[in-house]
Image 1 (cartoon, rainbow, N blue to C red):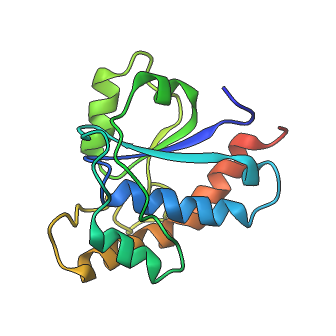
Image 2: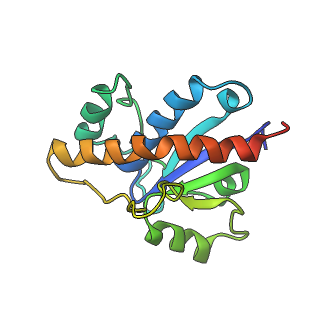
Length: 161
């Protein structure tokens, strides 16, 4: 594992939610002090088709936040990605369940992207695939809301590195 590790974001096909989350986390970490700034962020899908392009509405939703993910290409989740990740963040309980059933070993730091928000905040991020731009923007905003808690969690994982 590279020092201090990578952050892995997982969704279904790796063409909507996880590429947006990857772009947002990468942007947020770039503004943090070391060692957070050093963390690589990657994304994958539990049923991704390798090389499929990111959805146009995901690109537009992030472009409105000043982040370009237009070059993203989908990649399937692998055990190697899970093994190398400092932390894995999923969009839904279904994604976490698939990883828990199929991974060997299961990553020790496997969470929902919005898990660190206080109740009654919804912890899952719904799939906007095929929906209008406003659904993608809603997903983006739900991710942005979760980032401060994710940064605090990552800070705790990297303390002392």
